[in-house]
Length: 510
Image (cartoon, rainbow, N blue to C red; front, side, top):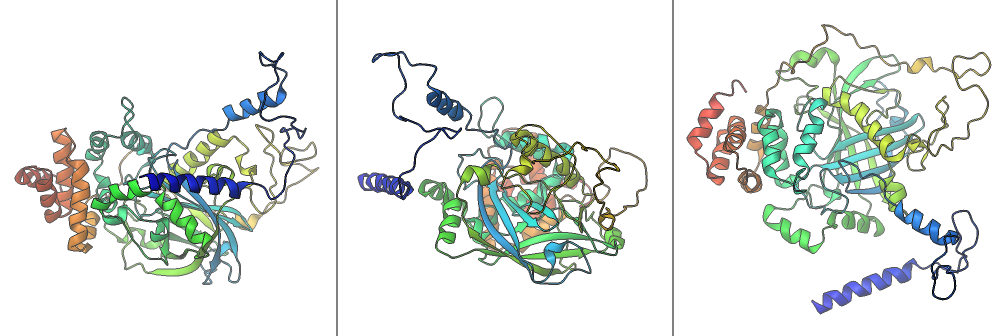
């Protein structure tokens, strides 16, 4: 123990030494005026009191009091890194997005994260991993905001605040409680597929380098002719997929609860740059209704009959110099699209188009896109103005459009695609739910070891549920997905298998 403490102190001292500037610099206030003494406050005589006129003291305390901005409600624990994207295929027949132009190279900033944990929480959490990529393209910024799974827990954004509240720490105790989470999931059977994925070993990646990323939702590609195709995005790790088994999680947290950040940064510092290949699945609009599930339902994966094709490679190669100005001030929103890429009618995506941009405006202010990490590499021209911390340097008195004095050129060739509409306004669930089948199909692809680890991890939380109705509802969902799956979970949680089987029989068609 003494050796470990000594080593830690040595590491801290070494880091402090390395942080010293190569040459002395004059300390200044924010206004640029020099600081005479940064160690002693101005006082009235040798005994004090301290004087309010000590502007350096006051400014220093004011700035310290305001160092924190609102923490993200979700994805608060994040790790940012810079890199580049290089396209490897000509897909101009599918999209006019210039980011896919052969021979081009687009700078990117990637923010990996956990979802439910606060900023200082351990990175080894049973949690989806955020995988958000900001492309600084020649048509503006494109944000691909995804996770490390191709699916999600819910299919309608109206349930998102409830989903988060149930999985965040209790509003009474401040501690996460599986009783709350499974109370929500027991009444949200569409989560069965995602829960099955989450509790496998892959639900606990041992590194951000060793996991895939997905855009989750279907988007639309639009080519120069205005032709539309639906598309899904998949980042495949060239480093492979590696995970932490349930019995090793506690030791991993004890050894280093910043494991994933340290692993990623140390890899880049050693010039071992992680890479992901970007693959897409493409679906024609005329084929949307050919499946017995809804392809725009984000709780479903598209089948292998829709082949993936590689379109590019991303390399991460630079650690940020400033955590706050990059990772904390970075703002991602799926509504940040470029010509040639548009949103689909996916209900969950439709809600995220508003919510993500709105939460960034709340956290960072109305001019957050002017911050260096969010600023496009192309000029920005519009009539948005003023607000907190605006520094866009707009000039002239014409802040409206149309105007015969100063007309802004319209780019007609990038008009949004027209989507035919039918029916009436409604508030109903989608028709083709199929909440359980894909969970069972996925379970049956697992090795026996992976199945055992899934049962161990999931029963560890499900076994703590004290509400009998919720517990049996969840077990019936997993049994409906696969009888072996549900039976093993029932036994692991000391439940009555026959009761689970009977409940599953009343769930209707899968």
